Image 1 (tube, rainbow, N blue to C red):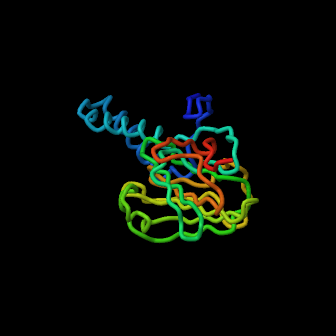
Image 2 (spheres, rainbow, N blue to C red):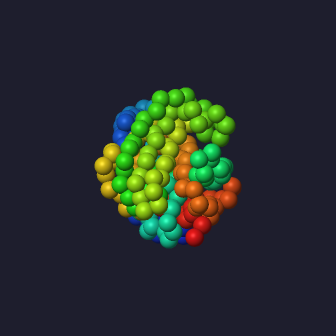
Image 3 (cartoon, rainbow, N blue to C red):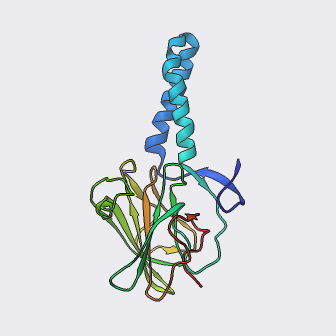
Length: 215
């Protein structure tokens, strides 16, 4: 199957790793009720919404192939730039909000080595809430040609499970798949001191394609 992502290029679509605990029971329930509906039409009351839910989850958990974009730092997530904030240490934080309609697979912003992957317990406020910084999150650090790059996957009110695909010591290439936030939420990327963002608040981003840094 082929679709067009925000980069306007056709992509082969697969299902994201880490979706089976959510998807398989839904598919099984939809298939079972559909079979029962052939014998008793009253089962259609359950089969129809379950089939719609299954279709929606297949869309939510799509994982299209991407051709890496040009730039030193690429967007780690599909979504919309929610905020751009100067940090006390000189870095700039770019926060990208992921809606349930976005692709939920996150990608490496640039080539390097994963130096740490830290899970931090927290709440589940909506990702657009100013206090969502304290939500459940996974903090990544990459050793790169630009120095240490920090990226944070933040869970939201619906997304209550972050699934890292890699661990400390792994080598990554630009736009490589590194993890999943089920049903979307927010991803923050911290640009090193001296590097300005090339995006603006409200701009749409495509993971692994949209350039984040200004050359």
